[in-house]
Image 1 (cartoon, one colour):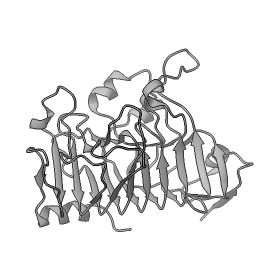
Image 2 (cartoon, helix red, strand yellow; image 1 turned 135 degrees about the horizontal axis):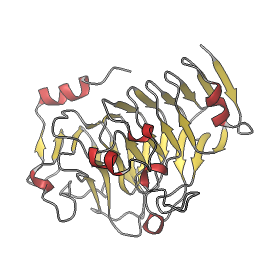
Image 3 (tube, rainbow, N blue to C red; image 1 turned 180 degrees about the vertical axis):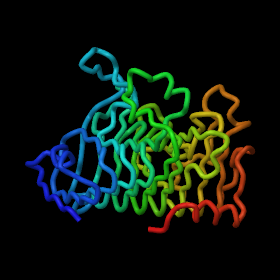
Image 4 (cartoon, rainbow, N blue to C red; image 1 turned 90 degrees about the vertical axis):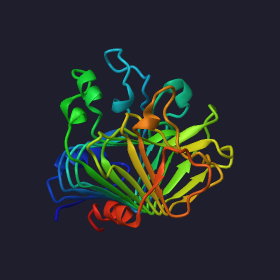
Length: 303
């Protein structure tokens, strides 16, 4: 294994240029303020802890690029994973632009590759914190010419987040990938707009696994109002989320799910729960059977 050690006085982006498959980059404690892209497969970024090792940037959707065009959501990431079998351990990826009601979406992590693993990490922003690629097909077509090809990649993608913290306020876990959130804390932060949504899935109808939240804790900042946060709303018609043996804080709406504005996605969205489900859920969500629950969890590789 190739090992590269860096400190906050170094550029992480320069270390990534030196990486070859099998490289482990060890980040010393501190703040790494830069925007990074990972294009080499089979590498690991390892910090000292999520509290001590922080990669941070501050792009936002309405920010103009060098040509005067808005970045849009999908170019605002602090870190983009564009190669398969990349692992993050014991670090934080953060977007600290803030004020999404003015600036628009602010992505911390974007993943467009299969085999991504994050363990004991934190992903922190406001609106649209973590994007699990690929894009919905209509956006792949729409952004031809604006997004470079790796940011429009289609195909099979699995992502695993284990014992992580993911924090945001609106649609802060979104996309079309198959993603397992195992033992994670999903934290809603305060938003002046007064309400929020944790997940915004956009899966195709033929996808069967999609977003799986297993034994996650849904928590909130003190300022977040009771019942003001929905677990999910469908970003596209057949978006799917499954919530298995999760713990829900006071901020989670009893209805659980929203159909997305004035759409008819309550007729197509796929939202499921297993375990202790509060009363009052929307009629179009349903309970998983034990065999369905087991199949979803066993789909992902064991860590």
